[in-house]
Image (cartoon, rainbow, N blue to C red):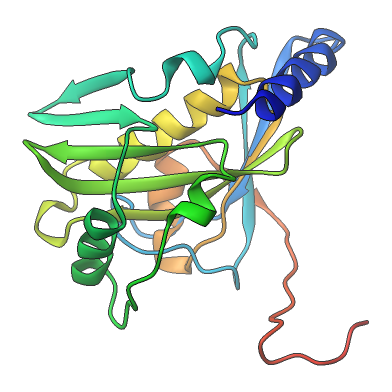
Length: 206
């Protein structure tokens, strides 16, 4: 992590120290169909929020690339070194019409991301984008098609939320399709309203 990110996190911790009830609010989108993170979030849907109690403690910078957990033979790693080839291979089999692209420019601006491995193979991914302050955003929750509905997507999202909590983030947001309502509910998100402008097809503001 860069010195800038570290400084931002320290600022966040100062804000959290002033929180009277010691509670963090994590926001996100509406869940729909218990489908362990194997559908891409769609911004044309509602958002949700999750309330969690915690203290902003350890720095993600010291954890990334080292922290990992194992469940049912799948290893979950926080911010590991991952290549465009690995991510594009996973996205190609997971999303119809995926066009290979570089992930570095996106990930280097994220708070962190979580990867799931079955042996040496990348089988799951979630990105935790960040506004540099109190808001983070769950993006691109992805699970290898033949390994879906086994809890991998839920663990990816939960670890991303845990990372946000440790960094002192106040709200985590997620947008998704209605069929993922139950999945994100199982991850702890509750519904809120949200708005969207699709820039590609909209030329007028409000």
